[in-house]
Length: 315
Image 1 (cartoon, rainbow, N blue to C red):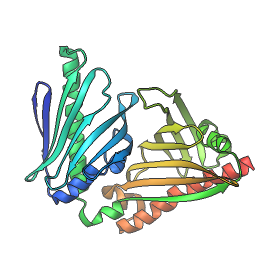
Image 2 (image 1 turned 135 degrees about the horizontal axis):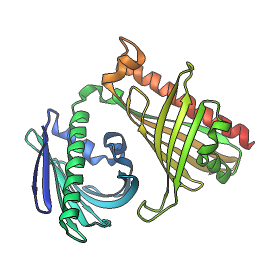
Image 3 (image 1 turned 90 degrees about the vertical axis):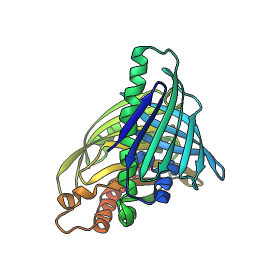
Image 4 (image 1 turned 90 degrees about the horizontal axis):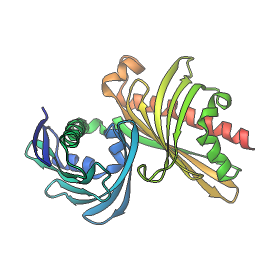
């Protein structure tokens, strides 16, 4: 059970877990896994890294919007502790920091913060948001840390690359204008797209929200929802916020790399299977390794088909 101790502008949330401290530390230290592990986290990047510290940028859902911030962290593997401090907190927060630590059998997530305009309403908002997010995050770390030897079958990534003899802008526009995909891609039945212009709050990138219905290879259809972060003519990162049955999380990237013949487009998928849904999704007796192979085949089929249509459309 997660417990909270909240006193003014400081709070601690903890949870009991049964996993090696080194595995817990690795999950907290490697922010590149956070978009799969933490539901609100859309994307995470390491900007600078030293032997025992780093500087990171996060994009996360906060209510109906996506916000971005940078943090500096100190990583102490021997003490199984990670301290963090936001560099550019946004109102109503004037400052935010804290730490993760393993204390015996407990995982503790602590926060300290200050508000730009302290009122009973803003103080309640900060307390409620921290309480909800901290409970969810400590529970997610516990679940992932306790996967044990199955971890590499549950959490995995893969990439494919397709060469397209066209300009980067044209290839980017094909991927960016996903509202036209029902006309261009046979496996897309319908798509609703909302685009928010690049803003400082979102880290200078355009944010798209996409609801898409696709037709599966067996003729069935399913609906997914995604948030996409767009860097013009270079890359589109996405996180599915409603995933197909059998997955607990799925993120991906379209990376456009110019070369002497046009561009190479790398399609990357990062996946976390849901062990509790494996047999319901893939059939009785399906192992995690088999589910991993089948999931990769399905995701790869759609991304390769999308790039194949881009190749046909642009050449």
